[in-house]
Image (cartoon, rainbow, N blue to C red; front, side):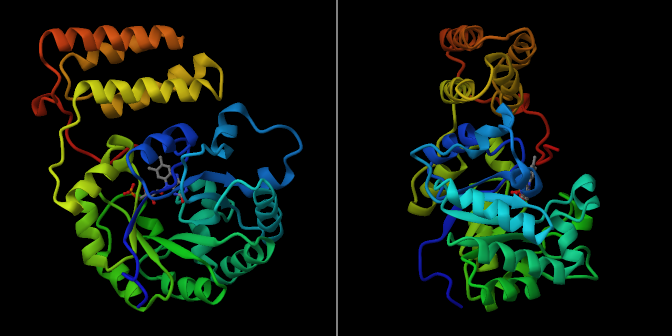
Length: 343
Ligand SMILES: Cc1cc2nc3c(=O)[nH]c(=O)nc-3n(C[C@H](O)[C@H](O)[C@H](O)COP(=O)(O)O)c2cc1C
């Protein structure tokens, strides 16, 4: 086992509609060791003649502070995956190409993509080979354990990835039939890590920094890929670092949370129409404000806001009120019940 020859790494897992440059940048500020773009449809990219949509184009942006950034491709036609890999490589912007064999969405698997490839390992192998041959960038694979309990193919595909010289794999410890629910199979990840000769990132079900470290320990993985918990707590990467060196983990108070929203909005406005970018902030406000006094009213007021200036004024006014009342902390009784569900 080659793991533990280097420091474990904690990376941001790819999330469609979420892991665009602006949000990735927030996670990098908090010390994420790497990130993967949201999935990029290989057919769309391979055939793209016109400009990509403004919303999607941000996923292809790379900020200077982004370390270890992989672009993720999804698709099941080897030639199109290869062509897309060539195009991504020619952009000279990414550190690696990641192949999606995990997405469980019905529309995605219906066309044979994402985790549907786990049902057809021969096709999966062709896709892996085509991408490997099309790029000189490192290639990595993200997959689930298998389609269902009866068809666990991850060990076989990971061996194939090794043989093809892939750089690493990210293993979501669930099957496709589990979607995003049910227990993550830590034992199965551990067994795979024990025999893998390339780094394996364990993925699935991490809810907080302590959890990420426990997951790392229990799986023997080289690192952990964090998805939904990073949406709610992008500071999780900083919390992990602090826990590892024995520093206290601070509570994230209102000024920090409000500051993140303002920063994210400003970055997002650099990529698409102000109105669109500001309206997207609602979902992040829903992640970061709950627990603060009066957050429900702020969320309601956000509905009527269409400009960055209005957004900033609303948040500044809210924060001023909290500061005046010396009420900057999270109140657990105001928190909605804990859940990882974002989909
Ligand atoms: C909203 C959302 C979008 C996702 N999009 C992608 C994607 O584009 N590519 C991918 O490989 N996985 C995607 N995933 C799966 C995550 O990368 C991760 O494997 C999964 O959420 C389990 O990890 P977690 O429990 O830490 O969230 C997505 C998950 C969510 C919740």
